[in-house]
Image (tube, rainbow, N blue to C red; front, top):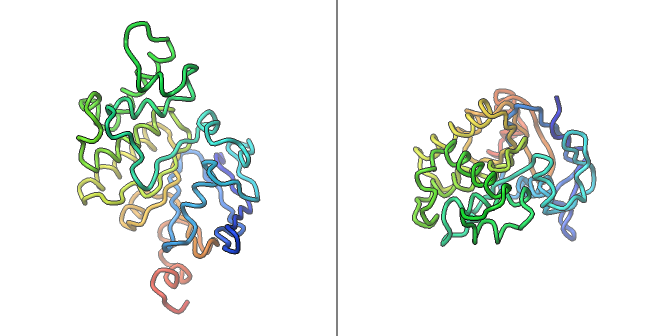
Length: 255
């Protein structure tokens, strides 16, 4: 069943055409990767899905049109994301950072809930949010660091905290923007396995931007290739690898 339906999405910044009529679908239970050279429009496309930019065209999540919808309303539809650069509160604890992802569940707001939360007198919603945060940390092997300042964790673990923050809302669709960037080989392997677990064991569909082709080929069900804001290929890892347009985009070969 189709989870995400992106149809003829275009976006321009002044005279620069960042995206041109990009169309694709993501099915339930799928890991769908978006690859392409630097400047191809990958993160711009993710920003359109998450609500940072309002493109032309349509983007539907389970049939609901989300173009024009405020970004903070999208988690209620099951869409969450991580960012290419770490976007955490370094002086706050790991669990407080993860609780930020549960803001939409809470009436009192994220600042009161996450930065000033205390166990005494907390609301039922706050208790559920903390339980969900601990569950997300447990899935990613971080629960022992729940009360530690996030700045004390190594880089790879901080990236996993971001992933836990996205998972606390129990998404149907997880948008990952270069999740393994800056990681060591071991950290990449660990995160790759965790993404596979989220997909296979927890039913989370994934749209992932990733430059490490080893990671992409290992876990993707389908891959779409962008070049200068246009889709030039889509298919299985084997189909994309054998596509002459893809080789030309990456290697400058004659198609």
